[in-house]
Image (spheres, rainbow, N blue to C red):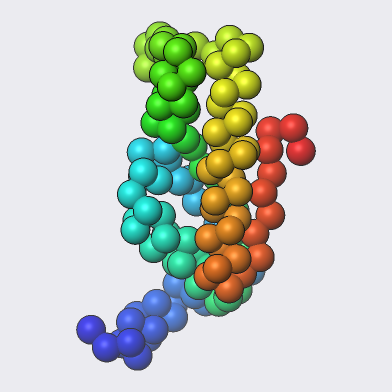
Length: 122
């Protein structure tokens, strides 16, 4: 499909959602593949430039689990939910705020927009 055809097909959606806030959830498992992450960020930047207010919310479960194991702590799950004691919370904050959040903000900047990273404490 040619670029102009893609734009014409997208036009009704651009008009409908112009000025609206879109919340996009990036799940931790979806973020493991750097190519997919970059594509999603590029799409989010495009949405921003056609007039939508984009909010990205990210997870990081696989990377939290990996970091916990590297630090000698085995993750505990009950009914599919991570049990988060104080030590696990500190590891999760280290991964989510320090690594993942900063990486996403940097990627947004490289794609030509301005990202603002927020932690749960902001």
